[in-house]
Image 1 (spheres, rainbow, N blue to C red):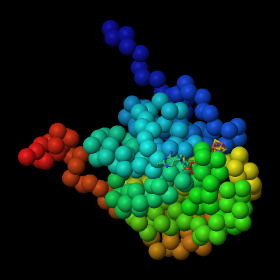
Image 2 (image 1 turned 90 degrees about the vertical axis):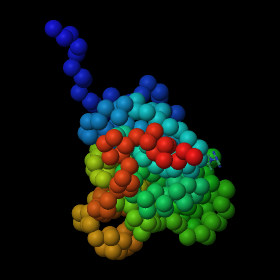
Image 3 (image 1 turned 45 degrees about the vertical axis):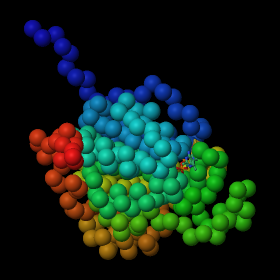
Length: 278
Ligand SMILES: Cc1ncc(C[n+]2csc(CCOP(=O)(O)OP(=O)(O)O)c2C)c(N)n1
Ligand code: SF4
């Protein structure tokens, strides 16, 4: 008789590592980690079949706090690393996590092209409209009139609109979530992982240390009044004209993920390498 125990059912705890997060008490990223582990339990893919890739920033610490394979890379390059990983190992579920500084400043160009390429992965950005890790510099999503020690009188620079830029660049799934609702965020993350192609989730995740006023987001966040559309023009109009706090899946498209030819049964990185040998 085989005395091997059947595999244990996956729960959120199955995806939490033994490392204790070092975020400031009350940081929104705690809830995003909780939402992510709930979502992974929902999709029921074991940790060894998942890779979590990040750049640099408070939010980019997430891979270490999971039991999945992790890659904590260099600032702004998470999507490039994740794209290579997914193309070489299409069998893995690839999730990218990071902040607005990492993803929209130094990594901004990679963001555009990751949307455009539409490789099957999920990108979760914890947007707190500030560089938390380096002590409060304005980021691309900072409001132009945010007055702080490091930006007296505000930057005066127009904010970047990640959702509409993702849509215009070709992302196949676009959603907004709120860290203050980890169950709702978990549902959205699970839907994003299941959706083929590049799925982008902008999570409003307060930095209570450098943007304590973001505690008020709890009063503003509300479910989007209508469900997701598959019409990019309609989605763009809704996203451009909403109040910035519509929570839910806003666009779900049907573009074919890249690359269609790699990852067919029998295809391997060794075969690809052979093609380039002189
Ligand atoms: C090449 C490079 N430039 C700058 C930095 C400094 N740096 C580290 S994290 C960071 C910004 C992080 O902001 P964000 O991605 O919004 O993450 P948060 O800390 O707010 O979660 C910067 C500028 C770096 N590590 N590497
Ligand atoms: S500085 Fe801000 S983003 Fe970083 S851990 Fe603290 S509250 Fe979170």
